[in-house]
Image: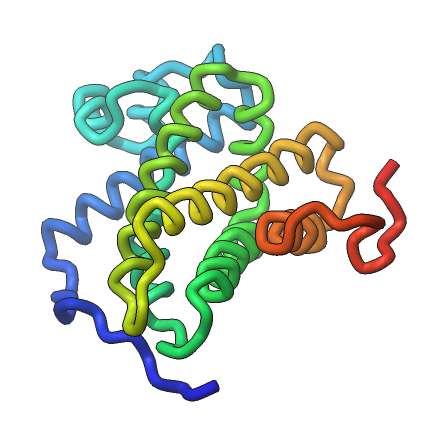
Length: 216
């Protein structure tokens, strides 16, 4: 396989001061929410408390996030995932590129902030409003990736094929995280991700995947 990369449509400009401040504020609000929810639970945590912990006003919190469920139930990884997809080798099968990008992003998030990943997974299980918002956010990211797939060099997949495949991968990873949370996080998440991606990419195996013993 060659090491040629897929050119982006245009070179991204470095984020300006205003954009960096916005990103910093969003991150501060999210971290404050995660800390408070871990301490006292989702229902007991208010927007006012989050604002105080993040050292911003409640109106600032609501300007960045319409509701409390948006703080913990949305993902902002779409642009980064698209950039990572474009950086994959140009002659790599687009299905392999997608699987690599999605797995790497999930594992990296776990390595960088395992507590936040576990908290979000717990809320996905327990809080319907968060679950609904997260699923909506994942669908939006999936559509961004599906569009990026059709821009790759060579014969592109038709839009429906790209959309269905990306959606199946995203749904599979979401369900894997749900399964992981329901089992008390005792399984190895990267191993579960590999199994889910195998099923999404290759279909349901006739026997155990790779001869693995079924999980109890």
